[in-house]
Length: 109
Image (cartoon, rainbow, N blue to C red; front, side, top):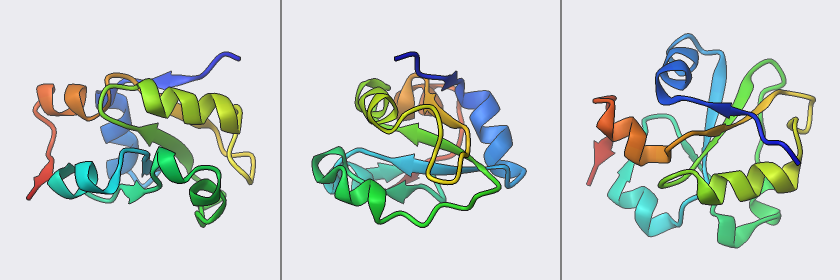
C-alpha cells in the first residue's frame, strides 16, 4: 500500500492553520522526553486500540509521526489512506528528528 507523506514544513503550516491533527505513535517515555506541541499520543505498542480510542475531527488532515517515520509508516499502512471519517492520512517524513533539524519548536522535559 502506498502511504501519503508530508514534509515537516508543510505539516507545521497545516498545524498552525488548524488544518491538521498530529498523532504521535512513539512510546510514552519518548513522548514525555520530547514532543511537538498539540500532538496526541497513541503508541504503536497499543495499536489498534489506541487508534480506535482517538476522537479525530472530521474536517482536518491526520498526520502520523514517530522518531524518524518508520513506526508512523506502519500505522498509516495499517489504517489505510484515510481516517475514520475519510480524513486524508499522512506520514510525517523524518519524524520528530527532521522537525527538530528544521528548527521547528519542540517541548522537551
